[in-house]
Image (cartoon, rainbow, N blue to C red; front, side, top):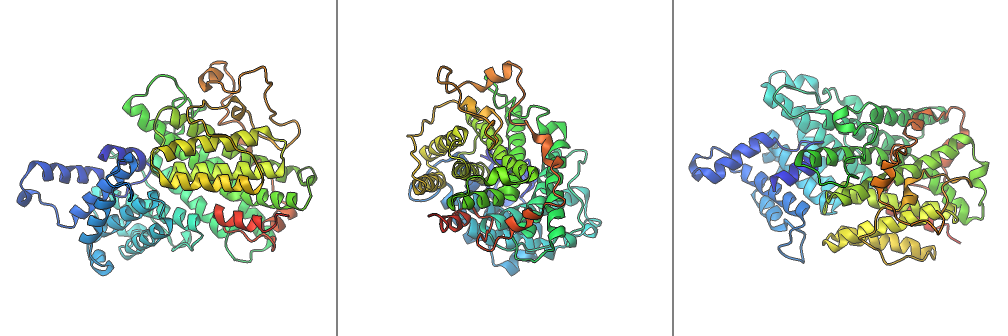
Length: 501
């Protein structure tokens, strides 16, 4: 159970010290209770890790409650109030962070935000956000505190974005160094990249979805810098976690992967999915604006937009397409998280983008195929007992119903459609339906075997090359008073629905 927790959430973040936890767990099962040397409160942490493990494994004890529910509530019973937790130092932070993680995976994001915010405030109480707080600590403690801080930081940033709530601390107040490698400790490469991506998420939230009245030039410059930063992070990922020039090669391979390859593939996929999520989060307002315009009969908006804005629109759908290819690869290797927030959030976000693409251009068969592929994976997760996936599938279906789009019965065994291996563009010359004489589904490994450019990375270099200086329309698209957006898909869809004729 510990292994699955580490595989899914223990490499690109560190909400507890795995080495210390393993030592305590070994003592618990091999020594008498009096000789374990662990505090009573550590048992609550043990229960939380078990609860998360049960949830990730999708092992049900009671079908009326999520997996791990008994462990989770037993842990809560053992936890004191916040004032007492503050006196527990790092352990109190870990308990709040793990509680937030369980709730986040269980699709209780608002509740998770409350726990993550509490964990962040407990961290601030220990000054973990300040570089000077680590000087008096032993190296092992300093390394863990630093990685714990950034894990809590990214957790709170992403939950704030997911539910549309405020962030608790400005980046200008943080002087703690980024996670770094130390001899004898697990590589910090993944957690360092993840922390940088969480910083970008925070910048998108505060720049694009806040109520601040930025000047036009300042806003455009910040959006430009966000896109360039995403490109830089993706291009400068260390080789051990980037997947090289073909990040999907491992997960699309036919042969079963070794345990080390599974860990590497899962981490690489998660980081690239997070990059794509940030791109979608930053650029989606353009698609929502275009979709709203389509409801008003303005079908030629794309061609009338500037080249830079057209590229941004295409880039947003491209990010969704790339994520979908990765998610199909994770299904192929059976390492898609049966219960976890990232894969599910990416699936729903991707499905939402393809729905918008259909609204903007109903002739794009690739967008329809994207919706059906998302629905097939959501159905697969739903069949495993993932109730959040069942809910997201119903929401996607409701969007399609509102648009009178016909949907098919999802085929959970279907291979990745070849059509989704082709780069997307709203232009008439973009990806078109493949001829009926050719197979609709093709194994991805055969595509790669032909030596074709890896579709997931196609166009990745273009993101930072989009020049927005002087793009006055960008500001007004993002600040349109008739389209007030929050960044939360369901809420933004409701806003868009109000414009349907």
